[in-house]
Length: 218
Image (cartoon, rainbow, N blue to C red; front, side, top):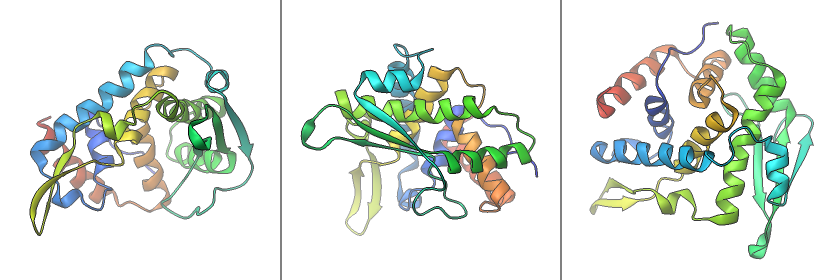
């Protein structure tokens, strides 16, 4: 199995937006600004956390990390939930982070089979740093969808601005990469995983990458 082709962080971010059911109806002119805002938010927030051990950082915010063996609920080909952050209800500080170690191992195994060397601890740290972003988002606000531009989505009544839920994931990816100083883009890891599991055809990825580059002008 071969790994995903190389692409830059902006291109990878837009590839992930393509998974939104409404993507084909989004105004392409709005997308570069949204991508850049999401990445900038994650990168800026990472500044104060670079080099911090994610479990300790989460504990400082009142979040407990729980290592759960086996696969995550709803696990299936093409879907890999490695971790989940839940804030306490009622505006209380803190919460829990479930780390599904079976899912982390599954994704890492797919990377190794594709010729991508990544250590077990390094891989877990990348996912926990991603969840640290969500914990910060829940603790201090505002939520990413409320802090980045909306995109116009075409419908029967014309184009209307809409928040894109995946904005938070893009910001968390940028944050995690910088906090851990990872050489691997989380979006590239995801693409390689999907290719390895057979949930994504290489030609489909190449076509989507060509569209992302057209939209971004890269």
